Image 1: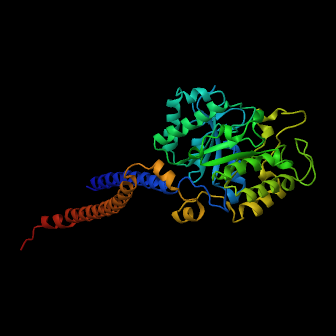
Image 2: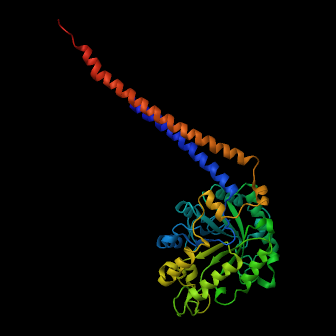
Image 3: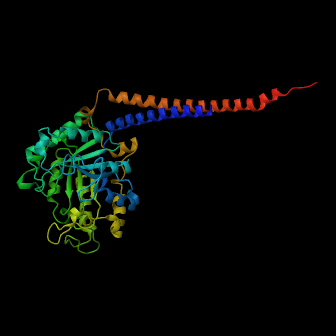
Length: 425
């Protein structure tokens, strides 16, 4: 009988867990519609760390003040020599460290994912619909993820290295965004990302611009520019601000590595890196109300792709903050503990309201499914009631069975033997 009681309780508990799981999914959808993903309000800047799994792991283990950053960087491609959507559901190393967005999502469930989508040489193919099935798979993967995503489509669109054809790039970008929206993916923001060195071949930013309705954030890369010329990053930030689009630093690292005092780094740059690079980036953040700062924290020279010289005597160097004590101290004091910087992804409704931009009416109308909010709110309420009742009933049943079992045992041990005695007068 006791075994039967335990079995019934286990069954009810399993049903309750399934109810809780469904409830969590509905609640997550409701939150995403209202607030996700979080783009910080004016005056706040989210901190994102990259750009490979192991480098991120090393950073979060060593930098205790930032053990679960607001966001984490990763990369994928619709199709390349490694297959389709490599680095999402399975890890891949292109020679630049392990890329694995699912691994990051599992290890850092409270962090968002800033995902670079490589589309070099594929814009026309994407635009004509050939890759629609792969795009849909990526959309489904992100939609089902526990994490919120910031997707950089065809990052560094204006660089000569990527050489994106203007018309094909715009059409490909728009097609990817449109397919995500048609599939109802709401835990995502789309990033239009410039290289920050000025458009190739005397073209203009406008030539690659997909349109305001397709861009949630503008991104820019900062590598060598802070050492001398910030003209192009400033121009790009102005282009976006005039169109009401928030700016983010999508990739950044002090090219040549970190050095302290007046030493020379691996790119031949002389001077204390905090003074000649970090302080310039911080000024750029203040000047343009940058909403997200993505910092690449790694030993570039230890990775095959970056170990080779990019110019005579120039290498990327070691940009790990945690291995440079003096700079680490300033990072903690002037970034991690400053009110401006959002170091963790908001986890409560109050924190979202205080930290994140509200969803504007255009985005609400674009993303909303008919009657979804009332249905999800009702499901959440009913599931909470069911959870309470099922737990209550299960424990009442358990106690009842225990009491009954004790009573039966008492009867068999104490009462029945007593009746077997024969009283002789």
